Image 1 (cartoon, rainbow, N blue to C red):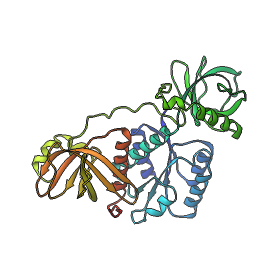
Image 2 (cartoon, rainbow, N blue to C red):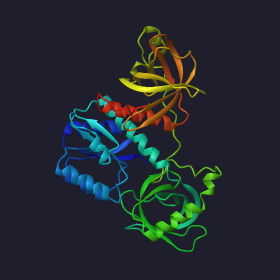
Image 3 (cartoon, one colour):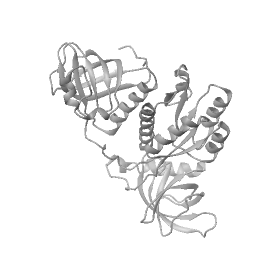
Image 4 (cartoon, rainbow, N blue to C red):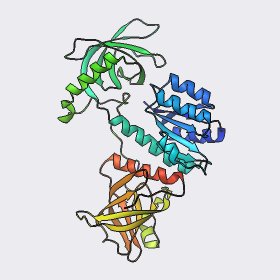
Amino acid sequence: MELRALVVCPDQDSASLLMLVLSELGMAAEHAPSIARGLELVDSQRFDAIVLDYRADRSSQDFLERLRQSAKNRASALIAVVDSEFHARPVFGLGASFVLYRPLSPERTRISLRAARSLVRRERRRSPRLRVTSSARVAFPGAPEMSAVLRDLSDGGTSIQSSSPLPRACKVYFEFALPGQERIVRLSGEVAWQDAHGRTGIRFLDVPQASRRLIQTWLQQNSVQLASGLPAQPAPGWSSEAEPPATQPDSGPDPAPKSKDSTFADHAGNRRSEHRFACKLGAEVYSLGSCVPNRCTLSDISENGCYVEMPSPLARQSGVEILVRTAEMKLRIRGQVLATHPGFGMGVRFMFRDSSEREEVLRLLAVLSAGPALDQQPH
């Protein structure tokens, strides 16, 4: 299933760019040209991310208030588009995860929306999905009741096996009993994905409190499955709160980003297509295995590496850990020194241990892309 985004933006040029970038990132996007239309969609459909052209007026405030009260979308990632002179901190206080400044640039928009997509996927993984085998009765308008088998379950969705496909555009009603429980779970949902083998992913919509308690109790009682390391049922898509295994990046690790002389530039080779941000970020760098901090400044950063300004760089091929603190986040990432320039600094390639570390770097790039300055926390 594609992640779904709602773009609430009256400016057609900005909306077109946002829709294009979301499509490039594999997200299905719907455009609402007005706040009123946006509220209709927020009330009737569920979205993983919402992009709001924020104008600091009553209509924008009304939208945010309704969004926070929405049963379907109060947990959606919020990206705010604001004027270039607008101070972003109050918008973060209103629940925004990312901020884009007008006029929108294609590259910065891509960086921020890519980071937002990573954040959405990361949030999905926080809800466990457990294997289950249980019969269910499924009903939807215009068709007789049918039988299905539940294959996995989270508190936000399930996947089922059925002999006939379910409709994509209507509410589906379920009744099932979980193993070890006598009471019946009753709820409604919508189709999130389907495959050619009769499997369907369901995102829960309306779940009565009694049914939610039954699901949560069963998940808690059977969470030993996760603790023992047993994998969840694989699926071609994911339920409301789950995601398939992450794919590998399209290309291998980038050598270090650009630096101040041609020697380090040779290490970058033909990697110039990767977008890099010039910056002045105070940081601490540690040799792996050492607790002695070296004060430094990051002057150039990309998704896969950075340039560290420090008078006495570490030796080439050294393993390092870099710590960056900002007003919005704290980032700790490991890397390897690829080039050194005594008196100037060193180029570092990031060495990600898991996808969440790459996502944190993407989020830092999104913050950098939002504006020319980045508030820093004192060390």
